[in-house]
Image (cartoon, rainbow, N blue to C red; front, side, top):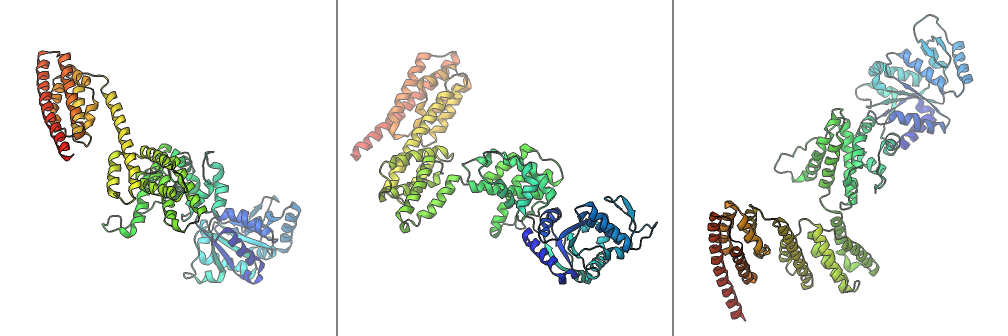
Length: 596
């Protein structure tokens, strides 16, 4: 039960005399806040119906008399002024048999500053407990309370013979099956469910370092993380340093990650951290090592996600301090692992769901979708897998008249931005997607995709030129090996014309400056690799490039006799390559003429 429900049940118990012949049991996880509830929420609520609480800790109590002494001392403290306390004490003295010098029930009443010895049974009958709830707390911490038969006999005596209202506070419920004395003494057992918001406000809030720019309600996220966990206040307090580390990790504010996904990851982290602080770690799913685990896929995935945090949280399970940097690093991986889709992709998924019912929408509803898409286009953060769908959505709005033709260019700009944003997107991947969808989205969509592919290719070419320009800006003895390795890589690709981006002067100078290994690597490429050049659109350009290299080699000469010999071989290879590519260009030209 939640605190408010428990309070109502206890109020009913206090207001019904017939129930006074049995005790209540309030049980809940150790450290879950039962004592705090009794001393605060319950005490204040009962005061409203003119009932006081008399809470007694049984910690260290070993016999019947000691409990009575503690109840008496606590009962005297209930009175708000000293006069009432003294009056009650004197009433006990007058009506009870005081046995001076006996050791039984010696209790120092701090408020009165005197020692008394009172017969236990007489004391129980003389104290007015009509409007008092006696709360016996810490039951598991008393050797006397562990002997349930004797202890419950004492409880039964208080409620049945003296008319007291008694509530036992325990970690575990009592078993009616094991002992019939439980049934005689106890009328009802109530399970205490912690009020997570109260726990946060009282135990956690002031200890957190919450960044000012956090974009979600931390209390709600922590409360969500504690649901389903065995909440232990001491474990919760030990977990606060780890929670603070997570709160101050940059990934928690990364707008590229779905907002709800970030908050859910933080809540899950809180749950794992509190459990680790209590010495509890998730068990590996039973089917984890079986080949057929399709029915437990989510459970396996969740356990796999937890393993990302296990190293960071391991010290907590052993009562040690965490390493802040390890926690931050693990939490970042945990958030990213739980949120493989970007925030923009999640938004696109939502939009796709609504777009499927486009034919059922009114104009105002379509305009709302159009505004959402407009914002998505402006950000350009969606992944390549959404390109064709985004194109389709946009063309629908244009064709229906919700957008004008200017949005075609805005769409293309957005696609360019998204292509640069997605690390997996390149011209080759876009061409593959273009081939896969073929005419599924229509000619108009394909034309936009073709324009995008052309522009992405140009961007890649510019980047390659900049890279080549940077790599070959300084020619040294080993540059020839770097150039030949680049040539070998490109000649195997679909873009062989990238070879021509390396200036002829750079090739010639690298031959002149190169060591034997460097010159031989160039010799190897021009002897075999260059002859594999088959890009039909740039054969004549390639021939011209080779001729420039040959002319530059004549111009720069050689540094040594052996260098001159190797240069001679390279020039011979270049001339052979020129002949091969010239013949290939002639054949290509003849084929084109015959087609025309």
